[in-house]
Image (tube, rainbow over all chains, first blue to last red; front, side, top):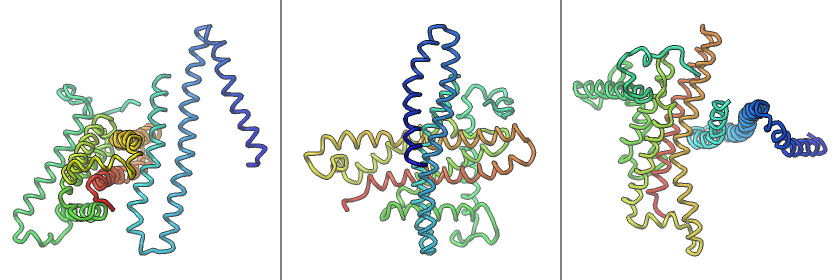
Length: 111
Length: 230
């Protein structure tokens, strides 16, 4: 992604973040619209949060697996010693994704 | 996500206890039964050091215990045999709990936070106990950090990180088993034939890895608590 695109995306995200509460406040007064918007926000939050968490966790786990495989390819004899720290590292990365997963489940139960 | 069918919902007397306690009891009974069978076969053998000639339960568990022992020795080092009953018991119990989720009609009891929190709080209490037993009051020095004038700050940080350990242990197991079981039940709802086999195999792998991760992390925490100054 070019730098300009990234900047445009950041601006769009900031605008969204600034504009959303205003829209929410407008509709919230009407009662039914507010309820709809709350569900909308919960669904978007759960889905988007899970996606972002999976994205970050995937990147992190990919780096771990890549360097472990590289190490094993360079020195196949060391694969036994590499396996356990790799699994522990993967589990620690994965737990961050799981926190989001649990939050997403909580949000989804509220809809 | 409601289960279409569980044995728990069929048995009339089961509802007096919560569902995760029910399934923990089943896993516990399975562990006890396996342990009793192995103990009996060891007692009956003419020479207990010689393994049985064919593929048997006792041979499988000897391999498991040996692997766990090697693992524990690699993590803790000298004097690791003392912790083998605790860590091995955790591993076997969590594995049996997890593998129940693959059997149709059962729910893994580890997909409830209460079961996991019970286990991880005992890990938390025990590794602190082992630390105090190994170092005496000097165990508190581990919380103080390397330099004295940073100690008040480090103490708070270390305390928080220690308190977060049982939470992260239990939430990791809970999230993994919950997610895995949910994937399995969603796919068996979508396509009841053949497709769930893939996710059952995945479930077996996840059960094994998560039991291993829980016991490995517990032994890492014990190793950090009992390690001497490097």
